[in-house]
Length: 475
Ligand code: BGP
Image 1 (cartoon, protein in one colour):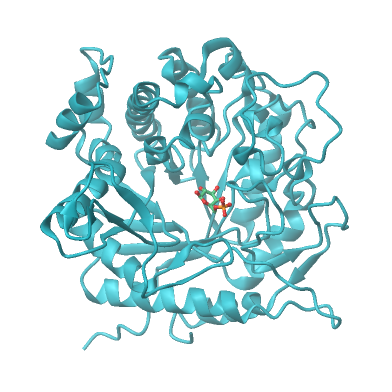
Image 2 (cartoon, protein in one colour):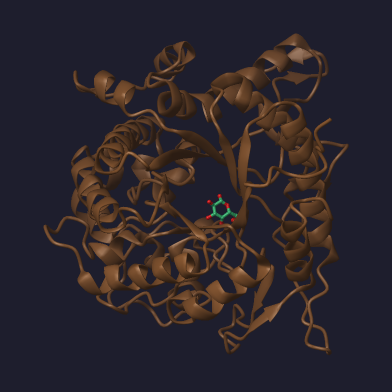
């Protein structure tokens, strides 16, 4: 009998980061401003800025230096290799390559940076997994064109993608077109996913129009990448929303299904199957969303389906439309606390079995390979007097999730890789802080600007190295 306590020998173990949260070097190497550069720490919860103040104020922007991958890439990649990474997921900053986003020719200095990173990874036999767009549009595309609700962005994105596919032909095989495209179902996504800074664009109409443009751009990029090199493997990336019915009232059970359909399957189905699912039409109609769809779009989507699905998975939630046995208004409670689960310091409910549940759900629906490209625990780490970080809580979190990955593989799910989020400490996307750390590698840098960027191996570093060495057997 097969040993399900071990992951497949060719399993892609690794870690994941994103340029705007990790690189820093925000104004170096000819890089232009991106939307991420004008969001200060915690700005998500503050008033949204429509235009960047000139000059940028003196306040501290943790992501301007972030954790300095821009200068420490060699050291960091050596640490990834020491842990035994088989794959490393990172994003290429669009505004490093096209500083404004709409130029004809790319910035050679920006490309040179990624040439070095990719060559260094390959030197250690680490497979690069490139996210083409991760929460970071060139600011100019927001100010001049209004972000992704404007169809013109498709062409700018494709110009950027073509440069990458041609330049890294034979060196990069795995690509993700957009990070967490389905975050556009949330108000949060208007700025982060689509670079739409106008507060009116938080509306459903703009967000779903932007998503449609990104889905078309993604499909065209998939077709382009396959044509440039048929070895290329393109994936979509979904922030997997796992919303359990809070009660067994049939209305709650149905609502939970609809919640998943809207938040996961509209984007997922278009990416994987090449068309909008049936329930999308009703959802658009009921919410007065009228998408502008060009006649050629149906063919583009059909021809540009992805080779694999990737997800971020951190937690689960409960949803409900029933109160005291009675049906309440539609769009009822979401993010209801599950009494059976513990939460992280940031209130994210920890649910390892939920990972097995969603892996089965996705595989049942799509039957193509799956990668988990984000998972981990955001926590406050303490540097002890002996210069160490004893992060048993992170190890515990990862251990439980990896155990469930094994179960899912035994269930028949074709799970091919796992890149834990923020393998080196970096800036949090939702809070803009450095103190919410995910890393297996600690970076000496704090929200008040102190710290010297020294890298320190946490206890989880040694633990993950052993996990990879034993192909998941020694948890
Ligand atoms: C995902 C994003 C990442 C990352 C992660 C953790 O939504 O793709 O960029 O940051 O969540 O979230 P946070 O940083 O808010 O803790």
